[in-house]
Image (tube, rainbow, N blue to C red):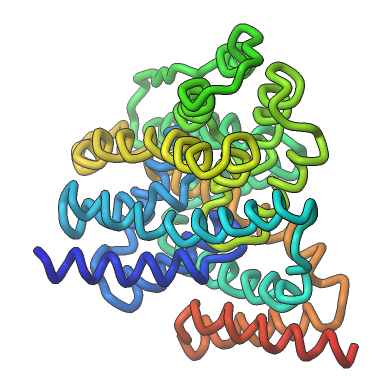
Length: 378
């Protein structure tokens, strides 16, 4: 057990240091490490876990680390994997927050990211290919995946697209199998969630109120960092007045620039509002619900797979998640392929990942070095 915990700590600390590019890239790196290289999980079970994390609030890639940790070493593995994945980004974000408070501006980090972004494109593309070939088992699932991809391009909310794809896919698969039973899933009201999140107009900042605010976010937040921005703006800027608009945008930028989960934006916000104690409380608050959700959900996933209806639903959600990953890939690609340097680095990263199966951490670091060099001559 101790050896497994040590393996989890080393792996997810390294991923926490090198996992740039958002949830899709993080999941691609994890698939490479725990399915392809270490074979801790089958690709099918990995897909089931991806689908399951998409159905609960919280950061998907961080919850994937917890699922993997639980599969490997029980609740201790869950705690170790999640903590060591979050810790590097939280510490780095805290340091940047200290610099921000001291000097009133952000360090110039953009040159280091010139090559990381296209390298991440290659990693995501490899993950989409590997997981997609496993997820698309028949024409019905292919239709669901394309439908969710189209919905994402049309601007439909990610959670809505995922849940509707899962329900319609389950109905389609079971109809093909000759069953006519209906499936019902509860949906939360986004407006209701936002009102609950914003509270009753409290303005005084205490550690308790700060922690409670981010605990609420961690308990209900679905979607990407842009959804997080909407909640933070409505709560921290408009409702509570704890941050200015400029400070919030800087916090979101740091969350995007640092490796690991984007929700470490909470660390930055907490420090700006209440120093080191605020950073600790905000970080703990936003991530604590994920630890609890995964602890409760993970043992149920095999039982869900044994049920014909839940198995159909999981298959549909899996392929829907692939559709969303493709949408992320296309959106990121539009920015990356605007320069010849981005095209070159993305192509090299794809070759290194898919053809030579190079470790994703080396691909990210190599992309940073190559990108920085090309930016000097370009």
